[in-house]
Image (cartoon, rainbow, N blue to C red):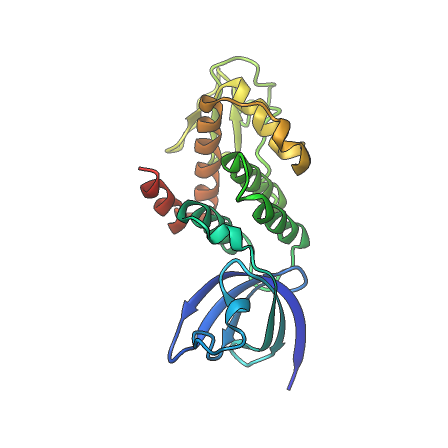
Length: 247
Ligand SMILES: [Zn+2]
């Protein structure tokens, strides 16, 4: 019997036969893992709190031939404020869905783990849409897909001539002279590019001081959501749900 311990955030929990669940965990040491939780849906299960989505827990796991199995689980941080309203919960679920989509199974990425943890801790507070934009931009960067903002992705010149546009397909800005093929090229003002550059470089603690307006935040959302969907090759379910929720 080969046992190992790790802490992890529960990204997703799917009911399977009887009262069992299959969880998708994200651990700083082990990366993304699929594990089996016996009896986790039973009201009397001692593991129950620790295997809920969004919970940060400590796990004792046993290696299995096809899937590892949870032997013990203890909740460390439950993020209960994220469960207070449906919109906050949906935003948190969106972050988890992105981590699941962007990280390969079994490859640790402690910086993405820390990013998720720090953003979840603030998500029930102010300016959460900007916080989600911060998360999307940093997740792209930590996955080796940092958006190119300094030079035009077609001609390589400094993109100073408006109108600027952003190509999710090319992963960066286009200057006013260049045309790019591809289904989605998003109009993007210089102010939006500047805010995106700050999201990519500023520490999280400074985010409260970042000045934006509604139009900039709208463009940022369009640019970053199109970028993550392009990379994933699908639209996350939680993003579709959020759009419906907000009408
Ligand atoms: Zn150009």
